[in-house]
Each structure stands twice: as structure tokens, then as C-alpha cells.
Length: 380
Image (cartoon, rainbow, N blue to C red; front, side, top):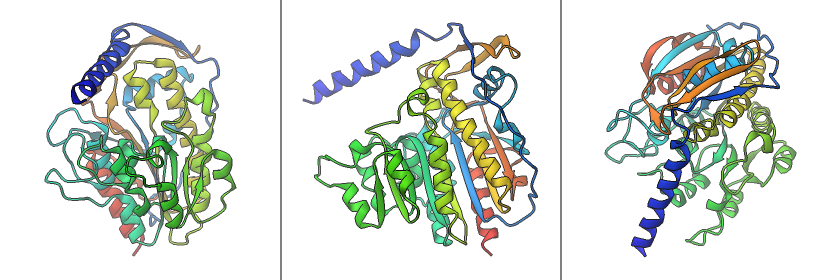
């Protein structure tokens, strides 16, 4: 049985490698036929106490991805309205090239860890995430993603596990998570489980309203929400529509009811997955979906003083290079050099209250640490 599973795993890995290897170092041309407008966002004071934090992560979204998207959208992105920028280094403790588990842990907990580890130290101690910290301050908390909720980044904010492959165990952490609004995919890990547990029933018992699609999510007006709207990862943007944008704004609407403020983590999860596949058109669709959501968030933050927005990536994926194009036509010519990650520093964008501390070049752990300090200072 073990040999069969190993053979199947090797075959799947080889098929995956073949899928992206055919596109490595192959020129891809993309023209964005439906570029979208980018509205100006008013500057706001940064030297005010931080009440709310919206932490947005474009998984796999390096500088090359951002500027390829910028060129194809005819020289405009909502990201550019952030008034503060920095660069973060993404290595993990045992490898120069990180994965989303170790990098997600760094962003969630402020601690570097080993490759594949979910919010635990290299020696196996559990780590608190920003969700835990904010909840401890009496704030409401949320996680909104476009992937399976047991995937690395949402897991790093809601669970603890020695290895990201332990999806059943990661899912079992959610009933005791301190996140109040949870939105994503992955229902297959929460029901029909090998251990017989119905985690939807457990979440309901823990006080969550259960939603299984966007319409049910939208109908919830208050309280704790557990919305799992797909069996696995959410569909690509052309099929799922603007559900990320709507889910984020729904989360903000509910979480902002707390007078003490809130913490919300948002992930554009599938930028990474399409970059792994060297799929330029769908990767850009994912990034544009994320950037349009950024526009909505920045607009909201501009009208709610005391809100800090931080936007970054966990790592680079695909070794993307912009080799030509025409910005006026929205055309880009690109090549991918790999189907994996690399160690090029990732951009950090910040806007609003407390944003000034995000300038410079620093470790990815500093993003979490500076958010944590801003939340503490704002709660005094």
C-alpha cells in the first residue's frame, strides 16, 4: 500500500513538473483587453493610534508580478496609492528558499521557522498569531482567502502543526481558533473525515453561523461566521467573479462593529498557484482580483481614521521576467525561469495609521512585529 501511494505521489509530482517545465523560458505574450480604472485615494494621517489592521498577502506576488500587472493595466494599480513602501527578506531557518508555511508563520507570528512548519518554532513550540494577539486585546478578527482553509497561509493564522501536509489536523484546529470571520474553501477537510468528526457541527457549537456559499455568507449580519464556499480552492476569477472583494468588505462590515477595532488577514492565494504553473493570463487575473480588492480596502481605510493597511507577499514564485511589451496597449511579454519559489525580496506597501514604520529593508518577521506593536500601542 505504501509503495502504491509513493508511486502515485511520484507520478503526480512528475506530472506537475511536466506541466510547468514546458513553459519555462518560453516567451508568453498577454494583452489586457479590459483594463480597469484606478481611483485616487486621499492621504490620511499616519501619526494616529492604530485601531484596525487589514493585512493583505498576495501569495507568490513579487515585484516582477506587480509591475507586469501594472504595465498590462496600462500603467495603473491600486497598490500604488500606498504612501509607504519597503522590502522584506523571506528565507526560513533551514533553507534559503522558503515555502508558504514557513513564510506564513513569519508573517503571522513574527518568528522564523523551518520549511513546511505551521506556526511552530523550529523546536516544536506552538506560536500565537496576530489573530490570537488581536483577540487578546478585545478586537474582532478575521481571515479571508481564495484557497483551501487548511493551506499554508490561513493555517498559519488559525492553527499550529509540525507540517503543512497534516491537513486533517490543521482543520481540527479551527473550532478553537480565535478568528471571528473565516472565509475560504476546503469543505472536504471539515466533513466526511477519517476520524468521523463533523467540524461544521463543531464550529456551529462554538458559536459560528455556517455558510456554504456566497449568498449564505452575505445574508449574515453579525456575529461569528464560518463560510466555506468550495470543496477545495476557489475557482479562478473568471468563474468565481468578485467574491474575494465582496467577502472582504463583508468581513470588514461585521468586524468593524467592535468598538475596540479589528484585525483582518486577506490572502490572494492563487497568484502563487498560477505562477507555479507558469500560467501568465490566469496569474494576472488573480493579481488583478487582489488589486481591485486592495482598492476597496484603501477606500474604506481612507474614510476610517486609525486603520492601518499593510500589503505584502510571502515569497516570489515562478521567476517571472518582464522582457517587453507596450504599456499604452496593455501588452506584456514575459518569461518564467522556474515553477518554484525564489529568494528575491518582496515588496511591502503600507497606508494609514502607523504606516511610517514599514519603510526600509528588513526580515519578513518584522512585518508581524511592527503590526503587533502598532496594535499594542493603539490599545493603550
